Length: 562
Image (tube, rainbow, N blue to C red; front, side, top):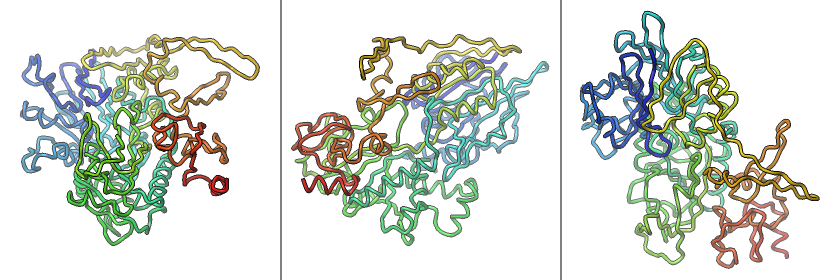
């Protein structure tokens, strides 16, 4: 008996996740994040695209196609955790919830359920989002039992509203196949608490400087996590500031309130003493934002949560105050690819406008990204793999280059069969008693190193520029080199690193672009500067340098005295 995996969609970009697995005579579909389910309707031989469908969690990239799937195949059985069944309707906000049929059946946690003769599934909490499940699928024959684990999106660490995946519960399962996400590739993240503190400090600094903060976030997950962070962080406890929650994010908060029994005990205890979200008495105040309030809400510094697809020009217009727009870091996708702001100094029309399909914002703004991870980093992913010890590992959900980083790890390809298929590529998963080591992927580049006096030059081949990661290797023009054992490791330094963590790299008394008031988004926005509109390096300088508010007091005073 062989296993097969046919990915209809693997979320290399925005197409979502949908996988079809064959175990013996059975076809099992995992998730349906496709907006267009036409591929699932093509070449049907048995009337239905699968024998059973399992949903890992309610995020759109895993679930937005389920309603269309049910409408096309009403007899197709679809299952998920109880919390996920309650969250799924938020994927179709334009519909009245009463018009959405209850097509998804709830399964219990950690209790095997048999769907067909010999075919069983068991759900384990996966972290990431309330109700998110890692699914253990088994098919038993007279000769042996075949086991597959599908993680969906998973997170080992505890977050504010979700407990992490219980690794102890899965340790020792030793599945034949592990289908796992690789969103962050091999990247290593700071501790969760450090991520939270950096975000809270950035928001606090913006409010103190008279800016309002705009946070475009998904309907479920990240927005609610940040709300709880701000409500309980010492920088905001008792602070006289309004937090406004707009549109679908408010609907997501209401859905969380209906899930209280499914949330961690600490959250349930918090809710006994004060409201989980909506509270106009305790500072900071959390309020619903009505559509008519969008254009006037920033008259005084505040924090606004809105949908990630919202038109931000409703908030940032000629009559609004200064804004800091904070975008969640998306691995492998720089801000410029997902969001571009065109700043106009002359616009006076408060109505939203468009310019070549891009948002035209006329308020004084700055745009930055932040990291508050909802997925495991590289070490977390490899930790899960080593604990489960499968024969085959199938990576999906992430940039192809990030997934390639995982498949090229010696610690993985020396022990497991690794796969990172594109959509529509059938993956055969032969199961044997012995392990045949696959060939290592070729990801090395050969170059030359020359030394002349105090200058070291490293020359790399032209082939390296084909890799899309090269464009982001050092967007500041600066790199860092350090020894790692007997190897010299080079890495690019990002603008965010230099500004938030790089005080040791840029001297505190240096009058440079990295410490200038007018440097935002790696560009100069001072019209009096010869560098206006150009990309600048942190250590650059121009005659009209002005120190930022975050500079040491002594430097600001020195510049003023001069």
